[in-house]
Length: 525
Image (cartoon, rainbow, N blue to C red; front, side):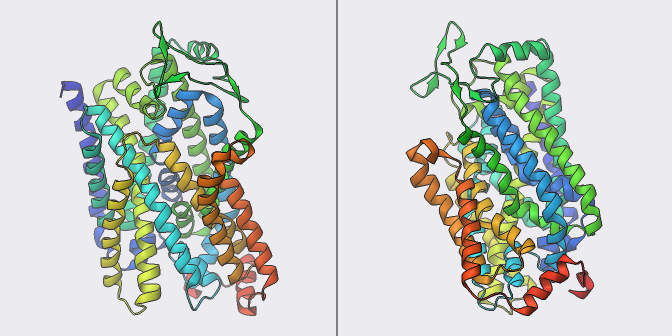
């Protein structure tokens, strides 16, 4: 290991110590009860709410996956996805945040998403709670695997070490500090990590643009690649034996292909995922005052727009600076690492690497904690042992954290995994399973328990069916599975609700109280 590598490692270790310190600081408060551990006692301020929501949402794919897509095939796929995500972020904060915060208190002070849905429909048999918890376990395990892939790629690329060993090391570290402090530690550290992430992106853009000869030179290079800068076209790397062909020191591209309406719809559909993202929705529930959500919305939207635009542009700059360094779509996700280590002083490069680690950790801790709460709080205490003490629930949650981490490690074992593809599947799963149900639960008085169950099952199952059986047919069937699964879930919710008995008067009255802002304080819940 050379001197630069040592400095990079030192910077990252210092950062990890700070994050662990946050976990230790919040340990005592987190252990008080399950509400503090899983929802922070609803004490988050507007800045922490906004920044931690977005940091936990974006994960390592913002710094590796999205720049990798832009580097590999140009602007269209990455930019349309970024536009969909930015719109989804804003609309989610605008229409869902306040009403969910209010309704989660009205619904017997619910502290997890499955618990909210179950309480919303006054369940006794806990069918909704069980189904929601199972889907959360499935999709968050996949999501956590994408974070571990990021850890493995980051450390193995930096230090030339074994991908598997580094992936396991990253998993152990994330597990350790999630065990310590729970939701409060997670949210406080995510706030710090959101700052580190955006600083890392800006540093790379400045350094990369200067090294490439300025913004104009970067654009001129991209224009020379057919379809690379076209919003309605896409670059097509010529690939042989799994790697892009290089001729006379230059990467070979074919004629630019068209970026169809179906492709644009698929990319924009990413925005629908926000309505079902537990790690974001929980922040809406955890803020200390509904009135502060307006400020949080503005902070979150600005952060997301800057971060997404920067991530896409880094991929374009990277193609100008290192055109032949990364010759597969999987390796393309390392472009930010190569740019940081090549262009920045070692300590600053270490800060950028800490940014990637920050993005990964800020998401994986959320995923692990929410998945653990789904099993421990919702299934174990909610169904099997209703008289379980807080201490027993905490023990089960820690065992669950360990098991989920092990399964995620097994999924992440393949070094050729593409982070962006793993995230897209889990994102679709949450968006289709919980997104329609969340919207109808908050805004449609007629939805009933049967419709909620039908919507969850149809949306979640259709993600698997569309991805595995229908997408391979190509053409119009190649559309991103989130969009058709989301629409099918909506149809099932409406049709089944209308064909079955309406909700009880008490459920309707609670809905109207939330809508009219009546009797929805925490004290009265």
